[in-house]
Length: 298
Image (cartoon, rainbow, N blue to C red):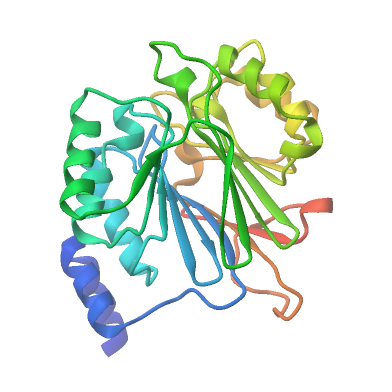
């Protein structure tokens, strides 16, 4: 009874107070061997939390209006620090929540695409990066960094165009034998350059976050074939769902997919040998993806 009352009380608290409680109590739900990728439900926008062991990377931050949701999710999962924040590009559904998150959660480093923005979300973020004295860089060439046993690769756009989507900074993570690729909002022009500049073996991954919330482009099918994922995520919304043409491409290739508008927040978790069978989950992915479980809000 007391536990149920406490849970109701916590749910009623604003995000900042939840964060304060998490910091004060020192709770941390991330154990030594953990590989979790969570697409936090922010509607048609990206906010991806990657947890590898004790380390956390945040790839995009959703909207300004969803920042409380993101902060509450992080606090609720015992995340007290972001080791790296990666911003794919400066559309409001990717960078909008950055400033509010930086205000309340320590961030160790920020990676940005290879251009500067001029809109509110970018300017607010840069103000708080400078106020918190967070080191940052605009990534102009392929770059790697490590956090513990996890290796991250950053792939800046080869284009120099006045088009935020095609200037997306893509990112990949490899942790033990697990891997994922996050493609921002890249469209045909950037997809073409990305595939020309990288061999299929170098970008093949288990998990693919679809470009541009699952919209269809001429090269979407080719990108999926190049990356050869075993599971796909689409950060769509009820108003703008994953394209039917993309669904057909995935179904034709027997690739399971999970989209935000149907599933809410989606967590893909790695299974390590010492874990017991029957851990909490909603769905399990097949064949080569048996090392993962998928949990959704709905």
